[in-house]
Amino acid sequence: MLSGRGFPTAAHLSTPHRSGHSAVTVHLVSSIAPSDATPSSSRRRLWRSHADRRRRFHRGWGQAFRDTVYILSGFVLAIVWWSLLVTLLATGLGLLVTLIGIPILVASLYLWIWIADTERWRANALLRTDVPRPYRTVVGQGTLRRTWERTKDPAVWRDLVYLLFVFFPLAIATFVIAVITWSVPLALVASPVTYRFGGSIQFGDTSRFNVDTLPEAAGGALIGLVLLAMVPWVLGLLAAAHAFTVRTLLGRRSSERVEQLTRQRTEAVDAAVAERRRIERDLHDGAQQRLTALAIDLGRARAKLDSDPEAARELVEQAHEDSKQALAELRNLARGIHPAILTDRGLDAALSALAARSSVPVEISVDLGERPSVAVESTAYFVVAEALTNATKHAAATRLEVRIRREEGVVVVEIEDNGVGGARIEPGGGLEGLTTRVATVDGTLTISSPAGGPTIVRAEVPCAS
Image 1 (cartoon, rainbow, N blue to C red):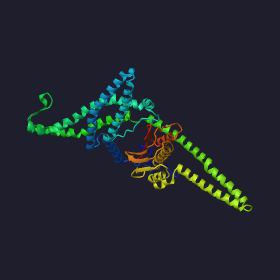
Image 2 (cartoon, rainbow, N blue to C red):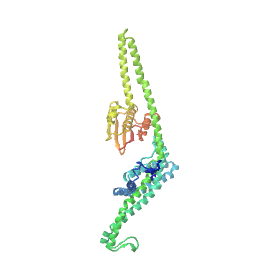
Image 3 (cartoon, one colour):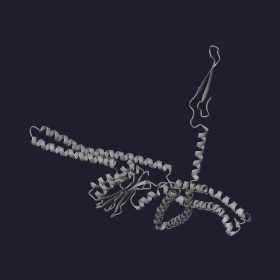
Image 4 (cartoon, rainbow, N blue to C red):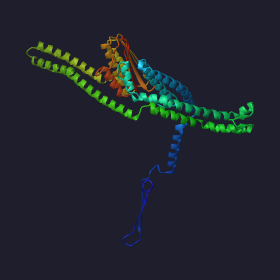
């Protein structure tokens, strides 16, 4: 006999004995039984599923008030955003033939991106819905080039669709429902007080909904309490509708995420290959040449040890100097791969050691709280190291400032110098390598470097709180 889940629970084998005696019955009872097949466990699973569905829309009165704030403020903001964008877009398109409309449209583009960021922030702060920025990394220099790259990003146009055609009607509809959801129960709950001080109460335009006695007012109050208990459910449904549209149109789509991860994996592989080639080149051109010269000098010294001890001593001294220089080059090479002080003592100590070797005064401020992961520390360290190297070599800076802090799930790294400015991300350059390194950990790197300075390199690296 098989159980309902396909596991044998008991088998009865009746086999007649050859000697003619009565049949011997062998009972085989299997000990294999699903542990979750008991009625009590099924009831627990059913209760948990109901509880999960309940928490999805009823997340407590505190969240109900936050949902109300989101819906009421969204109604006002939706009207403002819609009116502003429609006015700017209509003006820009109307003046496009005179070329005056181009800067208006460019300003409109960056304005609706900022508005979309504001809506993502509101959803995170009030609805507890985390919506990451979906935009592609812009590496171009100059306003026109960066704007052109932005216009090719599908996420930017989804922002506009959301603000003009989705958020505006949804905000109006949810505002009306939310006002009714709160006003009707509260009016019913307050009906005894209203009747006591104001006399008869009339609901609507007909006399069928009049409250003329105190018992009727008390009954209305009981109905209002029942309806008031349903307020978090209704507001939860309205907030879920907003959260769904925000995640769908303002969030990062799975296909874009896969594309981004594929691109980051390719960049990480290319960066690893380039790093390996750099190490091989440094070893071949530096330490390997030093060690070869060391071996030659020691061989010559051994040959002259008996015939010319003075010359042998000079060769040994030269070999000693070569060995110290080879050790220094190997130490610098190992520091370029991953400094030991970063592993042993953390980011603050590693950056202090880096600043001590800099020819330009460096002021360092690190405020991270608990120590971040190895990948975050390593990325932040090499961003600072590359930025300091560039500022020392190319910016003619006399002062450098490094600021590292933790902000809402990201580690922010800022390096500012007072140099001549004009830093750009160029193919094969150090800043492009930094952009790739930061992107491999799902971070972003931005550079502000106007002519005349200052230059600010800012990296944001995700870090679990």
